[in-house]
Amino acid sequence: ILVRKLRLRKSASPTSFRLTEKFILLLVFSAFITLCFGAIFFLPDSSKLLSGVFFHSSAVETNTRTGTDSVSNIAIGTDEKILAKIRKDHEKALVEAKDTLQKRPDEIKQEIQNDKEKMMKFAWDSYKRYAWGSNELRPVSKQGHSSNLFGSIKGATIVDALDTLYIMEMYEDFDMATEWVEKNLDFNVNAEVSVFEVNIRFVGGLLSAYYLSGKEVFRKKAIELGEKLLPAFKTPTGIPWALLNLKSGIGRNWPWASGGSSILAEYGTLHLEFMHLSKLSGNPAFAEKVMNIRKVLNRLDKPQGLYPNYLNPNSGQWGQHHVSVGGLGDSFYEYLLKAWLMSDKTDDEGKKLYYDALKAIETSLIRKSSGGLTYIAEWKGGLLEHKMGHLTCFAGGMIALGADGAPEDQTGHQMEQAAEIARTCHESYARTTLKLGPEAFRFDGGVEAIATRQNEKYFILRPEVIETYMYMWRFTHDPKYRDWGWEAVQALEKYCRVDGGYSGVRDVYASSPNHDDVQQSFYLAETLKYLYLLFSDDDHLPFDHWVFNTEAHPLPVIKKIPDTVKPHQLE
Image (cartoon, rainbow, N blue to C red; front, side):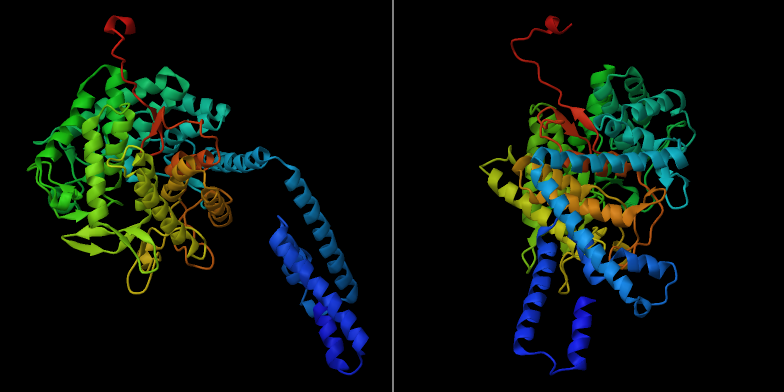
């Protein structure tokens, strides 16, 4: 307004200023501009000051909402109020800057950590209020939601969130969830479930809750559910069905899967949980089932060393030769590495399978765009599709996690690779309007790290990018990973938070969010947990003691028995 008034005066009487007056005016104007730019670049809450200077502060916004006609109707007295408001905001910003500079780095980090806890509390309280006992929450319509992935099993969000509640020391809520599990979690249902989803969310969540809290109910429930999943392995090859009726024990595969095939990421993502089920139950059947899967795979030829996404459980032969480190393939590779790590690095077969697969992926799938972005393409019958999914972004963290054990002095190279993938995935967020990542993004037709198809522009609160930031922070302590995580927090709060919880959005390139009305259970299990750990100390769930399943449920490393310890000493 001050600038506008000066311009009006000058245009009304172009000769009215003497040279001295012009010089003084120029000094005033320069000081004003310096103040504005100083606020932009140096004050921690500069957005408030900017809104006051350039957008007439929040007072004008309030007047607009309450029906004041226009800025032209604001009297000179209002101008003075606005200038006073600018001065007040400026003084407040200076005080905040001084307070921030006086805080220790650990205090600043704790404030950020508290924000993550507040996000979890809001998501959890919203679920409790509107959808308690349901699998998931519809935060816009404020009611329960259930996917057919769980059949008629209830409480997916409760079980998925157990360990997050415990890790964040939300013990009252953890006790409430424990009581629900004791009284209401029922697996005696005549319904078809996804073996993969029920394993990673329910079995994994129960196992983790047991190991963290020591409460026996979680161990018993995990074993009970594991036993109900065993009939899925009753196929000619022992490769399990994707879907299983928990009452009848009858299984089948997804009708859309190539030639009735089982899916690599599904049958290949049982190993961690089933090894622990054998350990806790004393029943070797769980471990035998998942070790047999390896035997089947070892007998097969791999095209260019790659594992196709589809395998027929009857014939034991590959289906269509589609290869992906994203959807349909992703967690198979993750579990090869983590099987070795969880075995206290005694599972040499798992180690070899992982590094051999990673070498084939680097040769055949990892590419660099003309703009210098490293991405992991998909392979279809020998042809590359230059597309990378949000799910694939977990690979940055996986490669970093495995870099230390890499053969032939490849550690440095693999860490560079992991960092480049993390940067690419960050770019997929940065190049959207909402600063949230699309479901998939492409590198063709002059486009880089941008979704070009409408059915790939959605964001459903996925964790994979933040997961990679967490691993990269732990291994490098490069502050940019925390900066990027904080950017994601701000976007989630601005565009995904609604009155009744957190919702996914249908188009991350739209100017305003169109919410999908689902608060996924994995948002509490994974996304918020990885954000919390990103800003935690390294000794909080350290990697040499814990391995995260693909739903971010921490499982302890099964320590090898020293040669000096005799069996009777363990009794």
